[in-house]
Length: 92
Image (cartoon, rainbow, N blue to C red):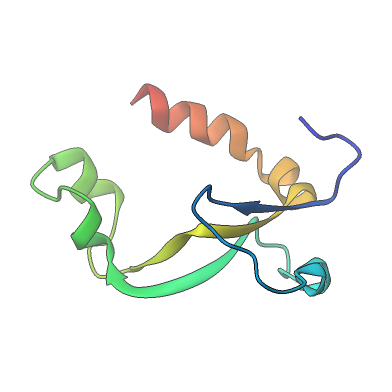
């Protein structure tokens, strides 16, 4: 979608920016696609583990992340073909 960009900072529509965010561009995600703030809530809070597909696909004790602010490394996104993975999960 953004072939000339290497990184994107995504902010949810309810985020209020009060300081300069330019330092976020300098964060090295070390080849990971997404950088986000980890929360203390586990997947079991958000996902229905009584569903067999969910229970086979996710680990209930893994920590979720705060969805309101994400940094995406678009080069890593393209290398790992996240768009195709997303479409796969969406179909399931």
